[in-house]
Image (tube, rainbow, N blue to C red; front, side):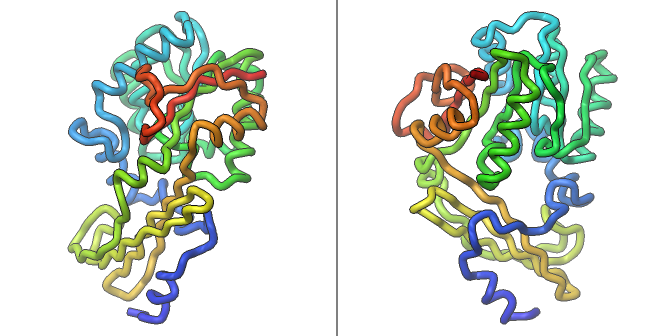
Length: 279
């Protein structure tokens, strides 16, 4: 093990410095992620089924969506929201950057006679134009993106929506980070989330309070000494900062909530759900 390299990795990287490029589409990690998405007993990758059901019902009512309306589900994962939306008669397109999740979602839709268009695609490259009545980006998927990536994504979504189309998202707040705290520690495993073989995991959290940015970093050392660095960045928001960012890119904030189930907004919330509309 190269201790000097490990010591260097304990220094705060510049915000949004990338880690391993195949993070979400790594053959082993994507298998573990799919298991986490489908586990109904926790919220680690996707929210619990009952929460998803409540969100879908609330969103359809709140946005006034009707059978035949077109909905874009960005970061759709294994299609947990998309399947329920399609079951209500909506025309759904799901986009995700994990082959394994898209394969599962496609098979599920076929088995349940749901007409859903799934695409394996990085939504930062989305080029659709004037197609959708609503676009969804759920469970904090906006937060890991750098400022440049967020601007690109918002431009893509604006272009993809019909005039007056809705964009719905949720983001974390500094209160969420305070609730969950830092993840600092280590463990060794014969097999685990990050690698199929024996490995050591060094977990560390880096806080950038002036910018409301946080990093969860996992340094994984395999038996042959190979080191992999996995980074999850989080841009936290207040009601004011997320409103400013969205308005600057052409979205009018229609309403703000504690979640996407219609819970009224409170200042101490760990999550902010937003319903916006193209200007």
